[in-house]
Image (cartoon, rainbow, N blue to C red; front, side, top):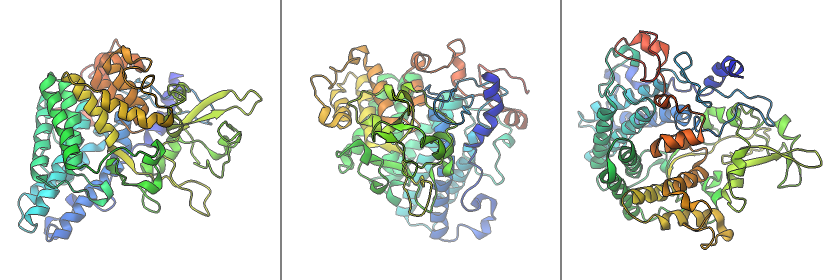
Length: 510
């Protein structure tokens, strides 16, 4: 099986190698004499940075979720299974999973260029410059937080350059503690520049002060648990979350059903805080590769049984036209309580057409796109949530649990929406639900799993809460705890002689 997987890993990885360019030519490759002449140049550049972020999304998802243990190397009902080595936690020096730090330094360089120009211009109004800088400092911290959680010690660079390649920097990495210090500094710079401006732009698909505050909560909870920040950092996280609740009172949970959170016709709803935008005739989820990676083929699904309708699947409705390179473990469906409405929104169960209609497996159903007239395949134009109010609640519960607070109300707000009419505080409310006596960390991890599956959070959640949870819920080898970070690929190591392989992997290219 391992040889089969290795032979197909290149195909699988290609689904997520989408970080090479912006929708327009990167401004950093143009001469400065043609740029930065008016406000329109700056606003176009901001749009370009967000466009590149959208192209980086598949790799961000890979870093945050695909190693989390709920993807299988065996097909259940799909034609193909090309599960990559990172899904199975079988990374090594020859199979690093992602190259060139997942391409994330490309947009970091663009952000660095913008900051350097915005700090030295009188073209922009003070208000507009501050808002733009709030966005850019926040986004730079966001990118570096992904790098920190994935590689630990990484190069921190604030200097813009043209023709940027991380391998050509010829400089060593900064320690994880130095990177964390700089991330927190950027977060504060973002907050300071936003000031009292809590406005959202572009239907919540542009970075905002609320996004920075959500990031701050994540960062400080990580440092609280993983970098000896303790209660002080958890308290800072709680303050950031309370800031959002105080200054954006219109945010809240969607109350008329979990499905409506992700409904294509309900974008930019009150639950969303920051999203990656997609839309019909604009851009598909993962540049259409979500379909290939996770959704079933029409010719396969029509020969499977849908227990909800009592008939075979209708391929004119369940017409995702995918291939399922990354099949889910059948157990994922059964991880949900049958009374939990999140189950049938998050995953779709597939049954045999035989008389007994035996359960065969499931596939992601959270993002359903739309079915334009005259087409045979769904258009995956769903917005992808980076931060939403449910996350604010569960991060608040976590911060409270680390500061001797009571997380009951936040947990139960999530469960009330999840169980709808089935909710009974005496049996489902915290701390009365089966398993609630397993400890608050276990409770929060289970709740986050059910709430945020397919939102790129599960691997990071397990890492944040502690290695014992990673080894409990994934295939990661407890004999190699340092391999929870990612190895550096051969080309990057060769191009930058100052780099050394991630601790825990062999240094074979230097």
